[in-house]
Amino acid sequence: MFLESNVKLQPAGWIEVVCGSMFSGKTEELLRRLKRARYARQHYVLLKPEKDVRYSEKAVVSHDENAMDCVLVKNSSEILRHMSGVEVIGIDEAQFFDDGLPEVCENLAVAGKRVIIAGLDMDFRGKPFGPIPQLLAMAEYVTKVHAICPHCGNLASHSYRFAQSDETILLGASDSYEPRCRKCFSLGDKLRWKKKSDPGK
Ligand code: ZN
Image 1 (spheres, rainbow, N blue to C red):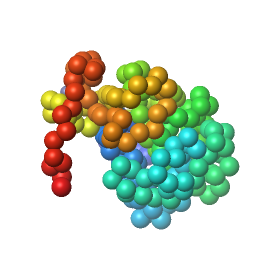
Image 2 (tube, rainbow, N blue to C red; image 1 turned 90 degrees about the vertical axis):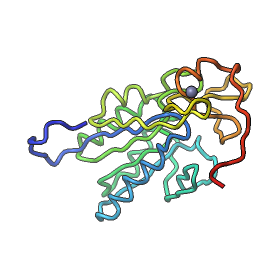
Image 3 (tube, rainbow, N blue to C red; image 1 turned 180 degrees about the horizontal axis):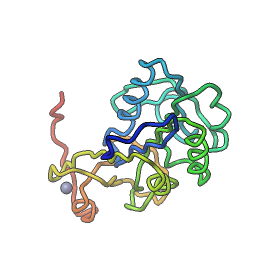
């Protein structure tokens, strides 16, 4: 929240973080912000780590297939190669980046750029994920978005994984993950989701 409404805005950069569980609309919110910047004719770039190759090599695709072209990068230092003339930087799936990402974002913001980060704040164990915790501490603006827990209808902050794997990075769709509230997440396998007919169809 921005309470100091009388502060005179300076032409400086800043960091925004949009985070939450799977199916919380993080990517949609990132794309919404970038589309507004595009409409204002600001130069922007959308980046994501090469590890996230779920649906498309060259587009950030959210679960509802709301897509936007993007650049794949191998690591955080490679981000700097794509900054020529750019005013607004969007970074999706930021939890998959290395520990150098916060410093890269800091340098970009100091250089006057608007940096918008989207990513999972917690992994499937409920633990802070990759460089996101540090970015949350550094950011001027933090937005936590929520899914809805399919078991109780409360806001969901956790990503529960059904798959029997201990790999932290398991890119998934709806058959391997579901969003859960804190309490239902704590119940683990005791809760089994009975598939109902899809109310959206
Ligand atoms: Zn719940």
